[in-house]
Amino acid sequence: MNKITIAIDGFSSTGKSTVAKQLAKHLGYVYVDSGAMYRAVTFYAMQNGLISKDDFNVEALIFQLEKITISFKFNESLGFAEVYLNGENIEKQIRTLEVSSFVSKVAAISEVRQKLVEQQQKMGLDKGVVMDGRDIGTVVFKDAELKLFMLASAEKRAIRRFDELIERGDKVLYEDVLHNVVERDHIDSTREDSPLVKADDAIEIDNTDMTLEEQFDKILKLAKMTIEGLK
Ligand code: CDP
Ligand code: CDP
Image (cartoon, rainbow, N blue to C red):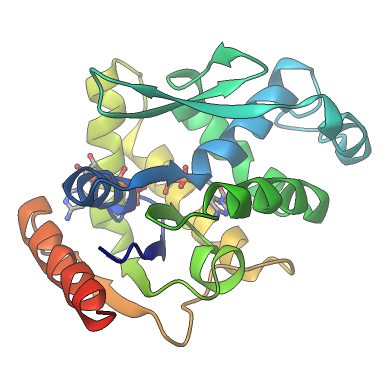
């Protein structure tokens, strides 16, 4: 069967990673969470005192990029690959609101993007990959056979992310989560290098009022049609 590349871009908490994991499982494809890679670099910067609320030593981070190795290892019981920073599993640590508050600043640095995009493109060489992020259809896999662009209202997205963080046991305020979602939308969409924009050939999906099931059904149909169309 023809294997395709599926690129899923869009705003935070639009269900990109959920649907990407479902698709990968269903089609027997590899799922790659490109956002986890930007979060991993951010976590490194935090651990090494390079970024804080008041300060960001961009030069030092760029200088230390060669010391950062990001890898993924499939976790059978979770059903997806977890992210590792220099050999350490950091899957849980990178999902905090604190990491979210710095990540868009780190992701705006061209040197960081260059390093991660190169690794992402290598992971997609054999096709059969579903990758989600902000620049997958516009930069990483410009030739992807299926491109999706996901959006939903900021309030709905903030509720989804807030519920997730509370369930994890993180003490966060809804207002702070909403602020982070809106701030990241702005930084990600207005940065100079690879801003978050819909690729001309991407299919837009607004899931403000869609359940996870409805969203998956719709996207699986699109994927099957694309694969069929190549035969
Ligand atoms: O899960 P959520 O949508 O909140 O974020 P994520 O996918 O984990 O991405 C975190 C951040 O990494 C984004 O807000 C972007 O700043 C950056 N990112 C990016 O610039 N390019 C990508 N391909 C993926 C993520
Ligand atoms: O990857 P991204 O940040 O775009 O979103 P996600 O992590 O897949 O989804 C964020 C949260 O929203 C998860 O808890 C999803 O279950 C939830 N969600 C939902 O309830 N309904 C949707 N249509 C999409 C996402």
